[in-house]
Amino acid sequence: MIFLFLSILSSAAIYVIFKYIDRFKINTFDVIIINYITASILGIILSDFNQISFSVFKDTWFPYSIIIGILFILLFVVIAKSSQVVGITITTVSNKMSVIIPIMVSIAIDPMDILTSMKAFGIFLALVAVFLTIYRKRKVDFHPRDIYLPVILFLGMGLVDSLVKYAQQNYVDDSILALFTVVLFVMAACAGLITKLLRKTPFSDLVKSKTIMWGIALGICNYGSLYFIIRTLNHQTNNGNTFDGSIVFGINNLGVIALSVIIGLLFFKEKLLKINWIGIIISFITIYILSIT
Image 1: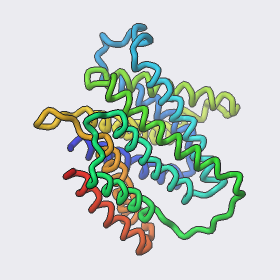
Image 2: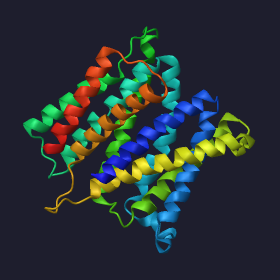
Image 3: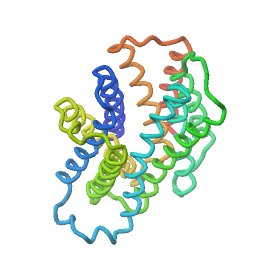
Image 4: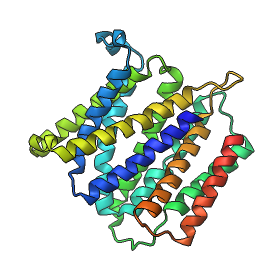
């Protein structure tokens, strides 16, 4: 479970970095681009250089890495737009509740991932815990037609995690994992640079010292969150079986939310409602239930 812990830690660190980026008023999109460039370089460093050739274009996993990489940038734009139009609360709920999609996809495509009554109860508790933990009392003030933004985010984030699970189960073992991440993050970086070009914002902003510094930090954590979640899905237990994807995604999502909320409380003096504390308690109970199923 060390890989799952490292994935949770990496994802929670992303939350902290975004907090500081917002506090220091640094252009988030520029940091995102540097982040993907950094993650690409990390993937190259960890790859077997003999694997890096034009033959990757013929590999069965190649299309999935391209799609996921492009979705990374597109969903970032959706998150930003949704936060501005319908609010951070609804956007966050849509983002986090999307975990139900890869959970159900994993159960559907993995013959070893069986939906038992205990697992179903744990998944239900996970959704309850997510909602209660991130709940905030905010005035809802947006036009009903704008509800498409959180809906797209919900489906998009669920699709990304589902594609990661599908690629991992069918094509991406540990021997090509690093190469898979290289293609994925290179595509994300290229998509980001093209988006920046279309927005007609100056490329000189990318070489600002703070942008580079936070971009590198974010890239290391972003790479770790993806790399370690796939290593967790690939990991074989003592009986030769791999962990159920439904359990991995459930525990990972709950762990990230609970740790992020605790970090926000301790280091950023964020206030929690009683309902948030109930959500955190349920999160830990759910993690235990899922870990023993």
